[in-house]
Image (cartoon, rainbow, N blue to C red; front, side, top):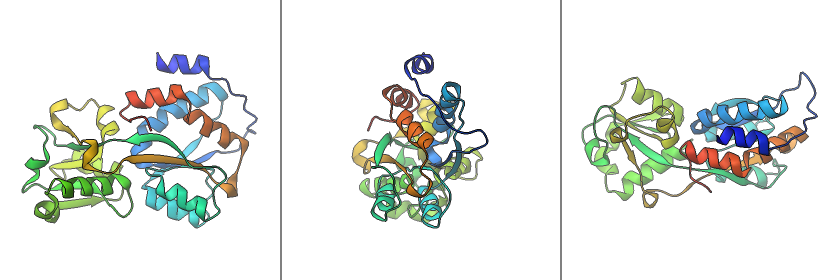
Length: 239
């Protein structure tokens, strides 16, 4: 229903030339949601914005080194703001979604207290905001010191999810949207309370070196109320 409403309510006129590519750098946690909004945008405009997925830190580094992206969808606001401060942004930084952190423990009731003696995964806090949130959460719960020796680090939250899904680790901190999209049983999920970590405000920004009108249109589309409503259904909170 949301998708149908979106297509009826949203009107865009594309002037994108055939053969051109709209290149978008997208935080790994947003992969599933991105594919859905990418499909909606293509249905409406005929343009399919191609994405490269990775940790926000890795994508940020690529952009500062001249990678030819038109748009950056980070898992935080800090890195887009840093690009703006460095003169690499062509727009103000906007928040397109607020991420939600969850602990996944397959085949049992999930609880951070149950991590004792278990190998668990989290994204690298130096590269991925979800990793920072996971470590902060355990620290605030007084559980980090006792469990850090058993931590396994993924390059991004998608790799962390894979570690858990493959059975390589017993549990892992991932994006709630990743679990919701795969119908993981509710008992296997511990949704971290907001007080457990700093808000994961996911920022979007146009990049100056590759400014194209179509990139601005796609950014506007992502910030549309109907898209944000769909993102809530997919496991994100409103900014």
